[in-house]
Image (cartoon, rainbow, N blue to C red; front, side, top):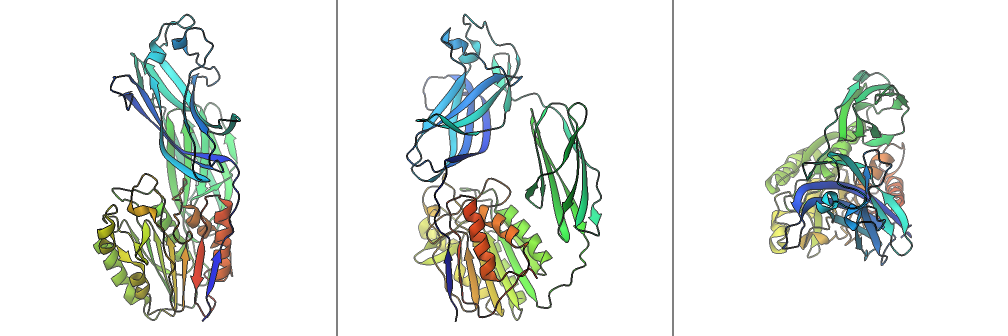
Length: 473
């Protein structure tokens, strides 16, 4: 028996921040006060690296709609202060996530008739969010612009500006080399354009036309089989996204061995929802199909649905050459055993949770009839807003002639990610593009790539396989 344990090295973090999401509640009262003060409440979700015990400053900076002229704060008369709303916090960890920092903008900042500004006219205004290290005033992150309306003495969302995205390319191809052509029409200035192929952003040539129109024209590389090309365009009214599915004829020789995979992604937890597991499972299923696996994809499984999916998969796994189970979602260790958590499990009741979840050893036993077994657990997703049960990580597992890969170290949590995929699955999907890697080489590459994303998690695996397995030949 050969057993290998691989743990990535810890890294020192640079001082960085990432603003994941900004959203606004219009015409609400200031929270946590008995006095009714109406205004606009800005919510910010962000994470920081390398700023443990450093006070950081989160600000909303207000401008006129030209996004060049600062708004003078008329409420303060003539003190020379520009309209900036701020909040401060001090991270207690090297990697910290804040789900909902709130900045409140009262009506009276826009209604007060000061000496330098009589009043604000009904119009569109803009703001952006900035994050600074307070003791040095070093600015480490800024958000895109966000527009809002001031009309009839109230705040409101910006007037919508239409955006249309039209794909001019074919939906099938006989070659992985593909000519992407897209026409974008927008009635306001475009501030951001993102094109991704199978969830991975691409640097594409963009030709600007007259007005606010854009033409995208670029040759891209696709995979054999199904591919998804997504275009996201942001203007003053928000983001418009459209996708195109392209099928590339598979002329490659399928593997001679029989390969089966069960891929599960759970996102819709009522008490602790996650953004990416369904995306992760969908993308992993597509990748494994291209690698010759007979794939069963299941998402948002209840306890009974999870059990039925495993039982149905058992017959497929029996006598096959390679059986693979991939799981993305919440998971945790209870009394030394690992549990994969269905979406209907009572996550805040630790005494009941294990009876309403799936024991990972039971899932492993489902694969027992296969010659070689692989389990990939992108679990223990971090949800800092959750209290209680979900703060634990997984424990180490042992198995015969199997490899078990974990997205993070024993007892630790893994990042859900701010893009389409989690950091771990994003790294795994990219590593699977490399041919002729053995599983140790594959998961060493994954650990290196996750470490480069500076999430703070350390992937690892344990293996008792006696023969090499190469997923992409």
